[in-house]
Each structure stands twice: as C-alpha cells, then as structure tokens.
Image 1 (cartoon, helix red, strand yellow):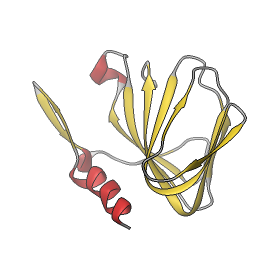
Image 2 (cartoon, rainbow, N blue to C red):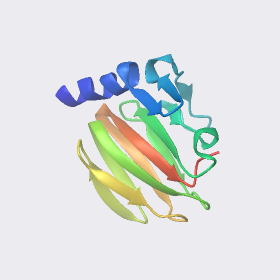
Image 3 (cartoon, rainbow, N blue to C red):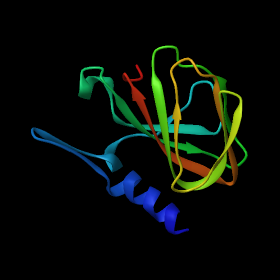
Amino acid sequence: MEYQKLFEAFDTKGRLRLPDTEVSFGALAWNEHPAFKGVALKHLVTAKDTGGQFSCHLVRVAPGKAIGEHVHKAQTETHEVIAGGGVCVNGGVRLAYEPGVISILPMGSPHSVTAGPDGLYLFAKFIPALT
C-alpha cells in the first residue's frame, strides 16, 4: 500500500514545474482509454508542452483489465511501475511488472499489459510525444 500512496501523491499533489509555468496534476482530468476498457490516462506532459519531443502520462489499469496488444510505429515507450502489478508482453517476452520496474518498449515492437488483482499504476513516456 505504500506504493499506492506514492501513486496517489503524484495523481493529486504532483506538479509540473517549468521556468514560466506550473501545472498541478490534481487539476488534470483522467481520460478513459478509447480502445481498452478499464484503462485510464492522465496526460501530465503533452506534445504541446514539449514541441512534440516527448510526453508523460499516469496510467491506471483496473484489476484484471488489459491494454491489448498494439504497436507504436512512431514512438519508443517506457513504463515505470509505481504500484500494483501485472504482466507486460514486450516483443513476445513476458515481463513481470511490480513497483520499481522500468521497461522500454521499442518503436515498432508489439506489446500488451495486463493488470494483476491489485490493478496496475505506472508512468508511461513516449518519445517523440504521443499525439
């Protein structure tokens, strides 16, 4: 549960600080994923913020739900697991997801993520930005 509190701190108290602005993560909305039921994203840093160079998102996957297999043809993606657990299949290889795991999903690599019984909470970063 300690990791769950860490995720909640980013969700409600986190901040993006830049020389000319500050954005409270608590003020940002959760967005249901358009294709995967039980998956929600909070867009922390967008293509607009970085001139398209990268984007950062909090991702919440409900217990037993999944981000089905898909490919990002134009982005490399990273996952940093903050809380919960599950399994990622990255290029055909099963990877256990638990707090503290970082995974790199290369551009063009098919991947999927399935949450365990406690759900899964992670940071996802895209280079270049997800649009």
